[in-house]
Image (cartoon, rainbow, N blue to C red):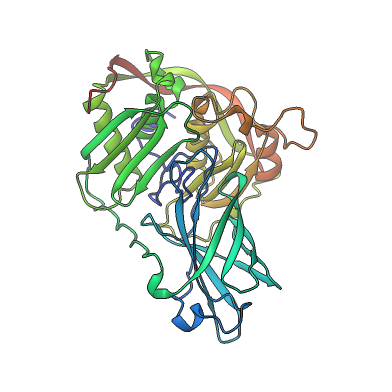
Length: 415
């Protein structure tokens, strides 16, 4: 655990969420308060005109579209649900993002009982009621944030359906991108949540401070940054830019972009040292790990996102990814993986955060999102939850680790 950890980009998450907090499937994102992670699966074939004009109101095959308008959101997010029916009468469905070039979110469960409909996968559950004429479905989304969100879908003819943007192709693996154009503005006070990701060709971050940027650009925890001014943590920024290389960047390339942004617009200069730090170490508990091996392809990006504070959904995650995700979003000190596990895992983790956790997000996430400590039905602490639910343990130790010593930095130059 020495210098080789410094300067490396680590995968944090892939998020494909709604208008509350959303980020493209780029292999990396930090999402808090109202995030949801996207998973790719086999999507149904496009509905035909005959399917759109259902023979009976209770036949739900076809194209359904609606706009999710979360509270405090300036604009909604348009979704399209395509439902197909095979020769045996079995339905399959997927959710498409009409405003972003993201992969579809396929449902592995579709239940229709009378006029009651339920679509579900590990990320999202949609429950709804079909109208008597079969032309609309009033739905509730559970999973895109800590609170249920209503959205109404209307049956739509194929020629009137919203076009679905093609997913942006990956950037060339050997590219070292920066920003062709970028704006940095102070975040609007009171804006909820936090996001980082891509919408089409645009990179966007909301409610990000310099500590957040350094964490993603260099894989550092706040405790590994020495000599930082107070505004590193308190000043929040919104970033909107376009890479100077076509395509969607991978995790390391996102880090390259942010490193160049910090040097150019914040005039960041630093040097490296090694110091003994208080760290958390993740190890396998005595009973062995309890996580499910991921069935995702090795080339698929990892997913690390929150449905609410203390409600983590992980997909295709290595233990190094898990350690970096905790360090960047949750813990008050660096986290080191010493599990020796080399696989990729899918799991959920629910716990009640304490006052030391999620400090990086207190300027952007309402305190009410945290589970009440006096709730008798609240989940256990992080340390108990990790052992009971994942078969791992987190221990506090002292160890030598890399630090970034700030030599010079300025508030961002004007756009």
